[in-house]
Amino acid sequence: MHRAFFVDDEPLVLKLFMSMPMFLECGYINEGHSTNPVEAVKIIKEKNPDVVFTDLKMPGLSGVEMMEELKRGGYGGEFVVISAYGEFKETRRFFKMGGFDYLIKPVSEHDLETLLEKLSGKLAGKKGAAPATETPSPELNKITAYLHSHVGLKHTLEAIGEKFDLKPNYICNLFSRYLDTTFVAYMTGLRMEKAAELLKTTRKPVKEIAALCGYQDYFYFCRVFRDAYRCPPTKYREAPE
Image (cartoon, rainbow, N blue to C red; front, side, top):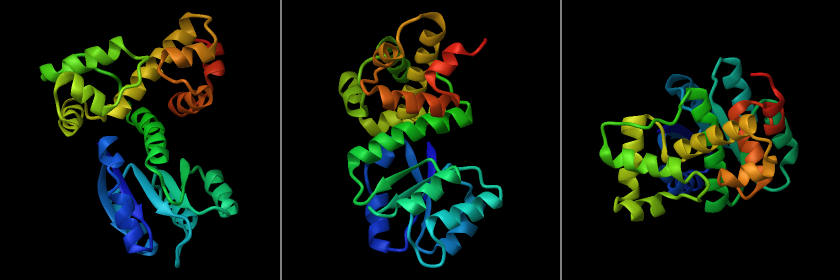
């Protein structure tokens, strides 16, 4: 499971955001939260979460200022800021500092799911996570074998749960316990591995490879691939072995 820390100076907004079910469904656990960005810096240094979700505008320290202070202290996790429309000047500064991505208020479940899927791919790459084929769990082995054979399909926890007559939370626990990853991160890693293989072994157009790996949005596929392999698909294909 990926460990997330949340910062927002508005308690109610913070509570509502943390309670969005997409976090658990995508394999993110709440490592802590704070309404005080100054105090949050101390806690984040101690807990060292995988990712920090923070409001952009806060008294004391803005989300970007908090990020700068943490990076100076050696924190290597990812940052996602939540901003309102019209705050693009600060958002540009955030990206220059190496921030991962941002969400616009009010945050929709669709936008959050899209971001978490992309983020899971990057975190899995940083942790060196790779798809496995055999575990002590027969149920999980059946699921992973199915995913390997159907990389190009759109998979959700709910759909997999229905197919194998298992609850989504139980499937999450299987991936966490036996593979030390999440369902989304596993699927993203599997798709990226397949994409990398096709890029090196075929001359299929990148757009076709994206579709074969389950991505109908070519530009989104390129973003996910770049986050996973630190280069665009075309450069990966051209790079020497």
